[in-house]
Length: 344
Image (cartoon, rainbow, N blue to C red):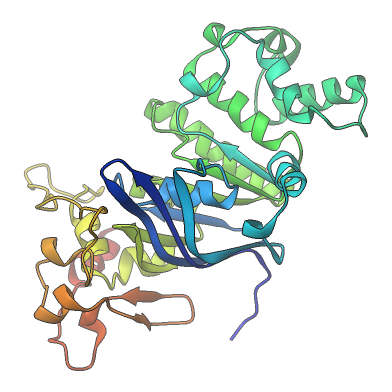
């Protein structure tokens, strides 16, 4: 088995929120890793725990009401959950960049955008104001912002949505972090600007060697950008593998249902897309078994009662599904995806 150098390792992570209505089990026993220079996608429908997991990496979830129940987050071998406040500040300001979901509301409307980029260096005594200004202008040029000096002096309301998102990317990159977390960075953008932002992230990965975690519910973004994929549902990881394995050798009914709910380039215009029936599980009282069992076409009695263990299907590909058990009935989840691959 080939050895990879992991930048980030998340091991059996569980994170919950205490509320007036009870405890929300937002993230449950999640494990995955991020390698140097790769783009890892985390995909799943709203409320599955993608963003909470990502914010756990930088300890951005409010504590309280949030709290870690178990697990480890190892960044370059150091456990983030045991870091002191100065170490966390170093992690957030230099080591990891975060691009938030909505650039329209993530920027301070009362500050010029250049100053907001420079603010990343607040408290850094080892760099002069002139150097900070130069770094800010250089990173603005790197992310494709034309006439950087002019844009530097503008306020957010004077910029388009795509330009605001480039500013957010510049803020994430200005301290030259080893990794960036992108929390649905193209959600509020039109498809043309979305394509430009995705191309920009790919270009930055090639130029800087930055590792990227891309959080999204858009499988098209995953296909274009990512090397490997983690599929989440109900606060848990359902399946993970390379992009080709997830798309064309799907092994979990939830992943398969996601594939069947979107149109491909080969989909006939008269084809009726198949939505996933039902609703996500109540994370105040999560199901004992597989979280997808209530909505699964292939659910068995064991699925309702016992959580499935992960089955390794290849060096990279694993899934948590009772259908992989030797006693389970044989179900062909691959037919739809094989047909898709043959027509692409």
